[in-house]
Length: 200
Image (cartoon, rainbow, N blue to C red; front, top):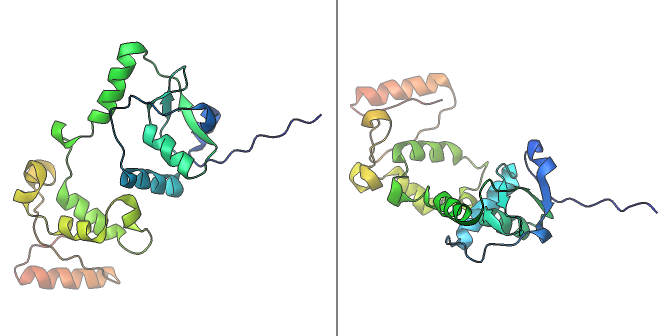
């Protein structure tokens, strides 16, 4: 009798494929100290839809996820049958501390903040109809707020760039049809006393 081929619903980096495990065999950590909002899961799902999984879920021998609970929730909601998962290097108390540190490392309280001028420029470049930035956690009001954020309002002082060389504040982003148009506008605005920067 021919063995029925296992159906795999998953998207991700090919180098992760050998590590695929059925989501039915994995369980969310009931002791996970990090709570994920619906919006948080939406962002992970949007990332998975666009680029697939590119980070492992770390799962203990008991099938409980130690790192990557949000990834597992997102995969389930997308209807994936599998995720790429590996065994942890640590067990017991070390494993729990490792999970907490992983969640803690991205918190603003420990110094992880946005460089608002760089973020504003990147979002402006991406806001061209190719992606729906709302799906990735940035709605229109937030993008406007980021684009006009003053240095003093941004967490950590909001100094952008290396050594604070980038200047924050209200800005206008102009999209040009050609390099020639870009040069003309740049020269005109600079001559009128505006601080300008070319990109692209």
